Image (tube, rainbow, N blue to C red; front, side, top):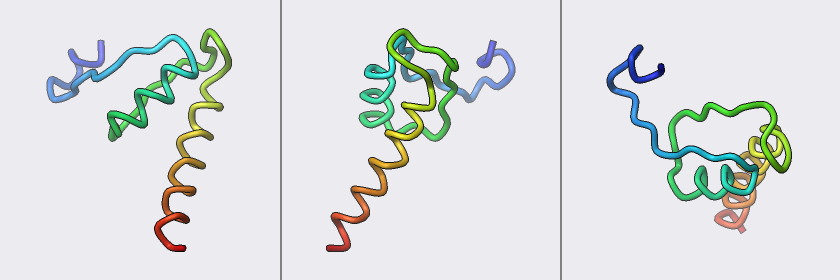
Length: 64
């Protein structure tokens, strides 16, 4: 559906679990992420928080 709205959209991954989503977002560094609220092993809030805190930790390491 998304590709029919905007042909420039490229789907780089599909995940069923929080673990998969965290791995894919870290490795692919997408510009935009669409997440289901409930995943097989948790919810999308866990993916979001992991992404935010992971970036903060990385920035802190660079500043030390």
